[in-house]
Amino acid sequence: MALIFSISDIHGYSQPLEEALTLVDLESDSQNKLILCGDYIDYGPDSCKVLYKIKSLVESYPDQVIVLMGNHEYRFLEFLNAGGHNLWSVEWLSTDMNFTTINSFISESTKEKIFGISKDKGYHDYLLDISKIIKKDVLTNHAGLIKWIKGMLLYYETPKAIYVHAGIDEEAEEYWKHGTPDEYFLSKYPATFGKFHKDIIAGHIGTSSLAKGKKFHDIYWDGDNHFFIDGEVNRSGCIPVLKYNTTTSRYSSFKKKRDGQGSYFFQEYVIK
Image (cartoon, rainbow, N blue to C red; front, side):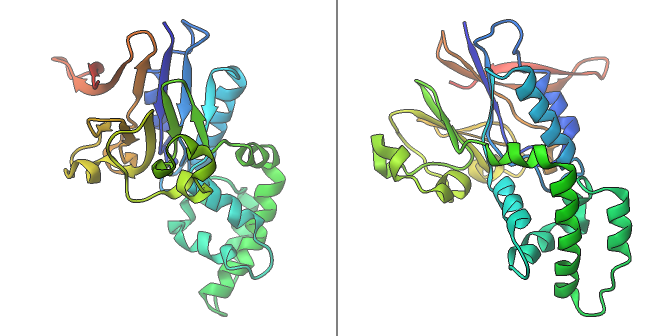
């Protein structure tokens, strides 16, 4: 009885990731898998730590852990690859509030250098100046990590389902692999609902918006072939885990509850 677990949109929150991983079983059956569906960085304070944690999981379970790329990893690579006065040297940094993400990567000496750079020429030029220092630090001190990020897959297919960060071109039907542009895999919006010949498991879009309920942060199933698993950890503090049993063909997840003594526990429930 092999199990396939999937999580997505960790966004730099290491504690909720560790909590979610307690629900993932990679030990009892070597056929069990964990599929991570992208967006491991940005928003939370531990982006770099999260990436190294996932990388270590791949190294420990090379045949069981599959890592997909999200649009946030893709944009991070664009920033690192942008040279000179390329717009991406400013664009990505300008969206990193208080440099929360980049501060998780760079050394203390680099932070001191950035602190000493003047903003007198204007914020745009300031970002260009510090981007050169930041890129040199990241590409030097995290070379192996960056190479690993570049090798992330855009999708993963099983006999039953397609796992992806954002979505696929469903109008291409059985030719979706050839008809889907990279930006669909990474950033497709809005969500597609309804029937497809395989189940599609995706993150990217917060489930509260799909359920039209601000407090909803669980797995969202459309009643047909689509499962959305971005529980908006930056709001909920939790990362939903989708579990698929290949023997029973059942999907399930877990709700965090509190017992009579005030301790938390997870209760599994069936989705489909």
